[in-house]
Image 1 (tube, rainbow, N blue to C red):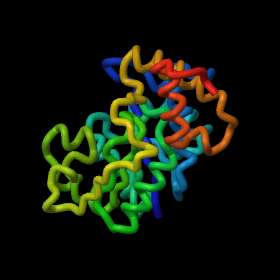
Image 2: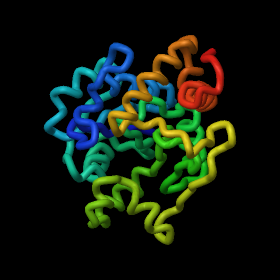
Image 3: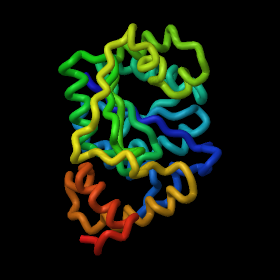
Length: 233
């Protein structure tokens, strides 16, 4: 069983309560969940700190995610808690500041990681904010037992890819159709949020359906929006 686990919080210092900022008339986190629902999975879970559970819970349930609360700073521990509760074999890790995640790339890297039985799988070369990580539940539980450094607890996967001798890592370069490391699609600052509003408006020209969440579509429209390379489709 594969569980997609979305981590989110409300007290980001660079853009406070960004998960609830309006985007297209709905909270930003709602669009993150909608894009991730295009990734085939057995369960969809939103893992947040205890102090934001009350505000996230109705949004998660409306978006088809199961809300779970856990440690605030120990995000690795939060994921381990989810694994012990739901007993998945594999986790797709996503973050709440990426409303333009590539659903097709997420499905592809998870399939590759599953077929290789990799402890960790993640593309390099994607736009910043477009990707997810596919991790075996067993590897995350081992990391939870062994990782001690604050950065290894706060960011979930550094212990895995920081110890290639202990874990099987699969970190391929993304296919050309999804590759553009110069493009920034995350929402972490006020400037990112302004750009996200522009890109969201541009993506509304794409008919509803899976194409709206595919990497090629997002890259093409983002380049036109941010670089002025032509009229929007």
